[in-house]
Amino acid sequence: MSDPNIPRLPITSPGDLLTAVPYLLGFNPIDSIVIIGLTGTRVVVASRTDLPHPGGVAAWADEYTPTQIRMLANVAATRAIAVGYGPTTTVTAVMDTVIPRLTAAGIDIFDALRVTDGRYFSYTCQDPACCPIDGVPFDPRRSDITMHAIVAGCHALPDRAALVASVAPTTGPARVAVTRATAHARSRRRALITQAGRDGLIRAGDDAVRDAFARYAAEHTLTDDELAWLTVLLPVPAIRDAAWRATDDKPWQAAMWADITRRAHPPLAAPPASLLAFAAWRRGEGALACVAIDRALAAHPGYTLAQLIDRALRAGLPPSVLDGWPHPEQPTA
Image 1 (cartoon, rainbow, N blue to C red):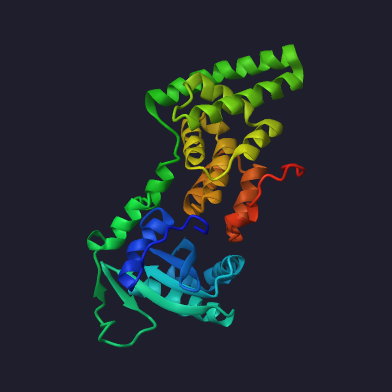
Image 2: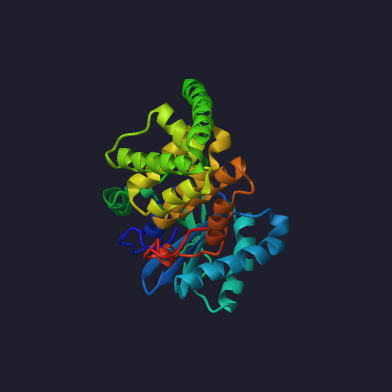
């Protein structure tokens, strides 16, 4: 997750920081390493990755550490905090490998922590008065940070699996209804092409995109038939690009593309899932953007827009690179 949408939370202790991490990511990390970038005293970026297998730490770090260094450089972060979630046997090997590499790249390590069984342990502090050998217990439920985060409109799902589930295909009668509607929409598209050609198809797509944005902006959703019609048109690059240009960091737009991604006939999920990833990235919701990209590439492994956003996320590019998007004279890819 990266600026500009990181919440301003009054962090004054390691316990406060650890309480804030799930709100920075959008879910509670498990068996993970989290890197938090700082500019001065302000958190400007946070990323999470699964811990590697203990036998493959060095090879994993060869790929992982350069991406973190680029991420920190892209947001002008000069200091970092590393937090490992898991047992000491797994976390310590990762910290012993990653921290020296970050330091060698000029990143000042403000703190390095391990979280295990509701306690945190510091790798940088040896003072038993504040960092006892058996760790420091912390309870997020009793922290003021939780209240501040909730008031700020932040939320934290139980784990990454819950985030993945939030964009998974719908099932049951809802799935059947959209599948049936999609078959009708495909027939309608073929008839439209026969009657009005490509120009007529593009006009219909522009109308469908405009109607969808208006509907969700008014806090409504598309019917199954309307959603099916939009999703059979979005694979057309010109129509997809019209939706892409209209997508920014408004919360309802991320909610719109999440709803369409969930409900879409699964083989047609790549365009809306990519647009969800784009909307989430613009909001600084990197974790949601990543799971949306996974959903898009599962539906269409070669989908160009998904691959483009995936590269941007892996490079740690901040949403600020899109300030002024879209440029009125610059075509989209």
